[in-house]
Length: 153
Image 1 (cartoon, helix red, strand yellow):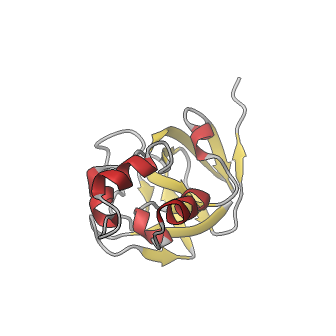
Image 2 (cartoon, rainbow, N blue to C red):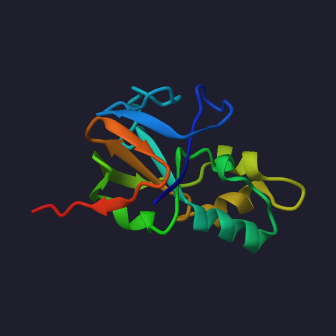
């Protein structure tokens, strides 16, 4: 299910916690920094599991907040890695999981501190830092909504 939703109006801008977001097919989240950008597939929206953020904090004695990962949607109780290459619904909105949202040096830099190096942050989040997806239909999503995998024939 969706636990929390964030948008940032500008690249590296403050992550704003919002109750709901409007999505436009092929463009992404209205008001987000990546809206209507198509530099690569899966740029419309990003997801990360709350459980992976908690595991990072526990395993590395850190206190990062949910917004610190810079992902749009924080999920709970769903394995996002399993959605790569699959279509899924959240409410009436259709998505396609494109690829894992692997950690980059920017994330490493943002989360590093005196007790954990940038490279160790990146290493800790490999295959655990979420999913990039394309938005396949217009609609609205909000916290508490659940995921439904679409069976394709």
